[in-house]
Figure 1 (cartoon, rainbow, N blue to C red):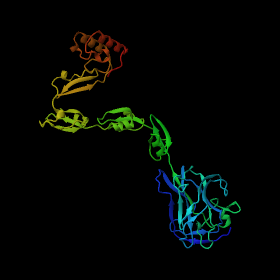
Figure 2: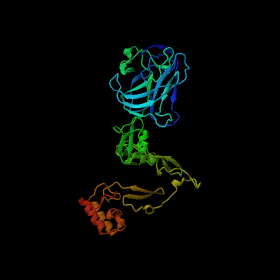
Figure 3: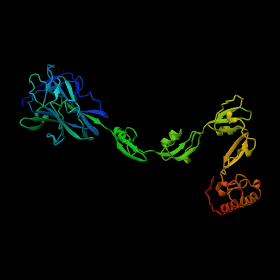
Figure 4: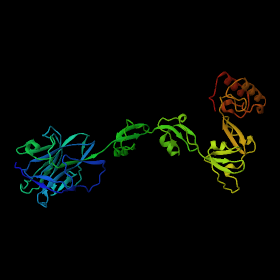
Length: 428
């Protein structure tokens, strides 16, 4: 083969087959050459028909080769299109001999003065170029001539300045692959590939499984993508933990999604209510002078003779009677506040029912509300209540939370509790 070269100027890109839409990840152009828009390049016009220039390239990621690019240039420009032999993508093989053929683009039509880009294997643009590659995988893109370039003008392939070892090959008649640097080619071939990087991310599946998939494949599988950069090795799918509710209470072992959907605030994977402090909500604080402030329960209790109407209540006065709706009287005696719950103490305070949860063991009924232990006083109170429930209002404990009558079962339940035998779990 004969050899000659010229310096050339600016280039653009002609993309062949970009009209059809496609789903992609992040496209990365893989190149050995250092040419940039406006850079100079060297035309290598000393090829004969059937000879090839080839670039050994390295994939930056797991993905697919979706396009190849070849810089095609004449000295004078404007030579019209050229129908050439082929562009072949090979496995890396053993440099300078490529490996197995991965794909062939027959009859590329080249435009003078630009990087020509090819994305399809057929003229009808129905078969996309798509070759799977892995991060760090080497492959070869080879351009084969059908025509003999004009040695005085071209057009032909182009290279930059500075030929890198083991990255540039040349196939010459009568059928031998060479290291093109050793044949005097002054730089890297301006032959490139476009790799569609498909980074995987953690994709969660109910109830708790995880697979690393691309976002597209996760969606196809009806999974729940966890976002770029995530991995099943570090992501906990559908985490559960403490959930602070809007009313200031806390629930353990709640799924994050359920907590958020319910208006709560998730406290983190494997968190426990015992170890978190939930923000306390505001509520109507009813003052003894008839006025109302929206305060937390703790703040309301610091003001003498007040009643806190409950979480998320407010000082709205719908009937315009100068008393907040939440502060209007609802009881006069404790009997009006009986909620039939053995686990609450029912009182009427400042005209409002207070159903306070009991904090006592089952069977602790004396004095009213209990004293934290089950002793002989509780047994005596139970017998007194058997005669007259009014003498021991909390004695009616069987079965478990009471059956609305005082009888021998309540006495037996009390004796069992005193001896440490609980036929029923502590209802409180």
